[in-house]
Length: 109
Length: 113
Image (cartoon, rainbow over all chains, first blue to last red; front, side):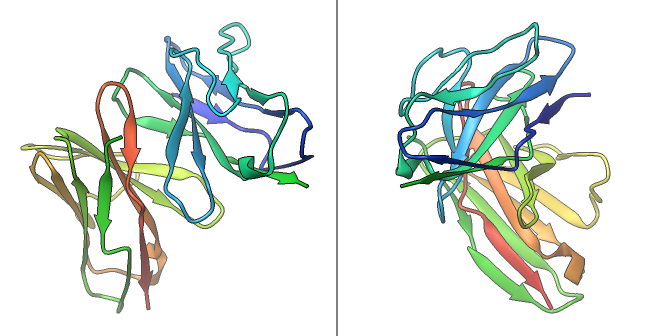
């Protein structure tokens, strides 16, 4: 069975500090990994996906198959980054998503 | 990007009544839509996969007779909560997408009194 774990429910950093949101997964095959973000009073939206290998809003995430991790990182956090972040896994593109528990990131001024 | 809408955005109903929630893909066609449930301060839990023109696929533990899903067209899926009870109160979210991305609706807040 597939599973996504985000060990930190809450994460608080100061503006300008580096931030890392952890995500570990368990899946027998080669899944697709995603990070979704939900800003206050807004719908869930895709932040980035591992196969794109791109940086969105300064965030990057590298898939580490050996450690089965997909941690989200940003070198300098901004106040507008405060949101709920969900790591998610899909077996294939377009298939059902399994979400982690989410991490509430707060960036303090 | 593509837009997914839900209606209503919130609904209050009495225990024992049924409530229908609509999920629409506004500018694209979706052969598959997904329905999630989210409890306060918790993650999204997949309830079922809605397939256009065929029966929905329910996740383990989700009562298909209680949560009726109909996907009659390529732009509309409906979730009907039948004989609702207070424990069904939750935030229901749908998504639709393509091979690249899932687009999420804004959610429907259901409160059963």
